[in-house]
Amino acid sequence: MLVRDAMSTVVLTIGPDHTLRQAAALMSARRVGAALVLDPDAGGIGILTERDILNSVGLGQNPDTERTHAHTTNDVVFAAPTWTVEEAAGAMAHGGFRHLIVLDGGEPAGIVSVRDVIRCWAPARQPAQHVPA
Image (tube, rainbow, N blue to C red; front, side, top):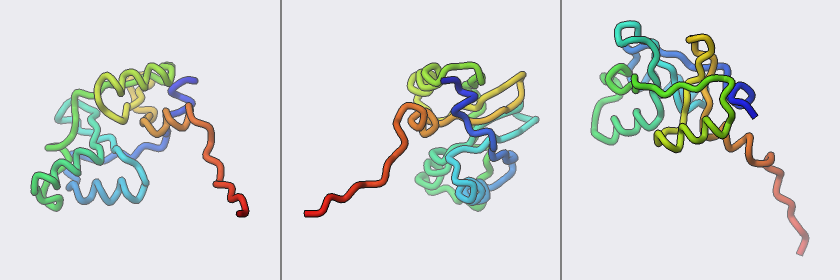
């Protein structure tokens, strides 16, 4: 299976001046664990993850004043839609992260997450069957 078949194509995109609270609220509303951060001044595309927000709050930083640009990963590993899911999983395991931005022709096309990879490899969850005693 290819990354293009596993990735989420609806991607949350935020700016570098969003507060961490705003980013968290948007991520929560969309039920996603990462957002693309488009920052032309910092060189383009970065990623902000739930872990970045958690680390900031854990350090006692104020999510109402901390800006996403200070917590964004800018040295991003990108995937191509033509990668296999195995290649994406290998890149995540090697880099120690759970999300890959997928670029197609240099433009963001989606995000593939560990959850997407698992969904491809594991059978769909079936409701529990209760056996009468």
